[in-house]
Length: 289
Image 1 (spheres, one colour):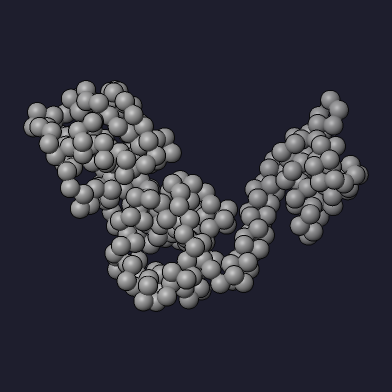
Image 2 (tube, rainbow, N blue to C red):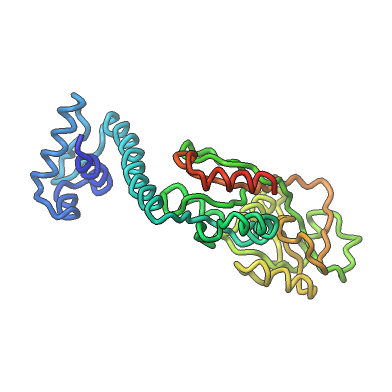
């Protein structure tokens, strides 16, 4: 089957218009019509329902099923080009989320250097959420990630590096002996990481579950700035223990009867990269972190 037919069908399902789809691709409307007919003839079933008003349609059940397959086929088609380009450039684009890379990379730095892997790795810094999206659509090849759940995507494989936990933190100079409940800790001023972080998502769940609301006085996407402000006793914060390893001037605030998810530090890669010798070596290195 011509890949163009799949591309036309996908766009037709989005725009729900033959003329708009034709305009998008810069082709004639009959080109789109004949492409749809080829698909329907190939599979022997109607794929769209034309509506009474002009130039509009919806997918049949068969059309919806075909679209789900087409989405996977087109993604794989894009990944073929990405993989061939990666092999040609002899480089691997690797996601390095700030908190995770700051914790992991110093532990494996000597091995990466001794194996000359820094000349092969092109680091991509972003949040774990963004890097996971880029990994799925082929913009990066593999990534360190921090997550509260293990990857479920069929096209991804992973290696668990560490299981950490979330902590409420305060300046080491602050007396927190009387702060032992969720309600009391949320009476304090908070310095929070912004909505793009997994910390914000977990904090939101706590707020909803325990019916509390933090006094958020400042938000930032820079976890180092957050830690600096907490050290100076400008407020409390909520962060994975990954971010406070060997950081002086910070203490954990212990809260009773608080149910929190684990924070998984992961090495994640696309399934079709398993034969890469560089990937195999990286897996060995990060496995022993």
